[in-house]
Length: 481
Image (cartoon, rainbow, N blue to C red):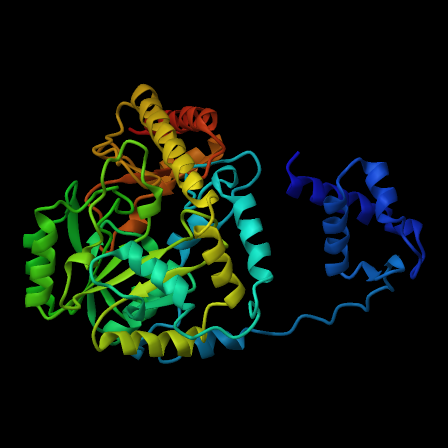
């Protein structure tokens, strides 16, 4: 049984037994609970901690755990209906909307119910995360001199230097800011580069979190289509001309959701078009460290070929480690760096120093390259297993591109298929998939599904998930007129 399940089960049993003890009565010792329930001391500690958080027990160091005094009756619920008026007043004239649709982001963050195979996840499965290496790095970081002190607002110099080396070109540590995850970095970049009400060009389809960030900042996302070679330069130039936009957000490497890589021929074109438009390119280099074993040499970040400060680069450690390891970098050159720094400081002050120190410990350890090599092999195997299962079980779903990096496959549904019906039927069949609609800033060209092969337990679960998806599709297609 997984540790989290063991904790929940033990907490439930202890909760049911609390009536055996009078208020203030002492519960059995942790050792006695370990022996009785045959669980680890960690499980006992966490279960008791859960009961303490619920106010059911009180822990007294050196004395033990005691049943808490009865809680006072809850106060009657208040009347919050007045908030509907306050939150909607003057909404029609707002430049920056106060209501934000986060559904496209939440679908990749919410844990699925028990028994559901997670094809909609956005992070590595725990079995792929470097948990021991991260725990060791955090322990070493906590012992560093000054580890709990206030860090430089731009980030630790050594960590900025490490990110700068990874970006390459002539980028220096002085042009790098440490930020709290890629989503935070993208938010800072958009706020710095575009005023409320302005258009911002985005790839189509694109990451729903980017669309949510833009709309929350009062910006107008304008879609620019991509194909297997990335964004289409002629359409990008036309979009700049038609809208007067000064920002283009792109993922040149293993784009989410298509997996496309911006081709060598298009890279200089994109930079030239943006430079002539007097615009910035926000480069979201989100999965460079999730390359597959058979990928071959990767193209360098766009920023490494940009001496003129057109590109604002975002990269992160989160995707290759854990959703809670939120350490990333913003890199830019020229006057825009000061604006980025100012917004970063106002919004967040700084990234906690222990987390930065842990990042340095992790990437400087022998465990880091071993982890990346293991993930490269695992992701390739999972990608191949999912692609093969889809071809066998669901040949009617078009799979136009199989990427050599990242964690996604982008499937086109047959014409006339309602993707919401497929998503609902899939969930009933026990597999969670992401609908394509949230990935488009405007009306989609067709119905799509996005499948993740990184958030599942292994190849066997992929095969079972695809079989469940086939059953869901059969249900929907069989019900079609």
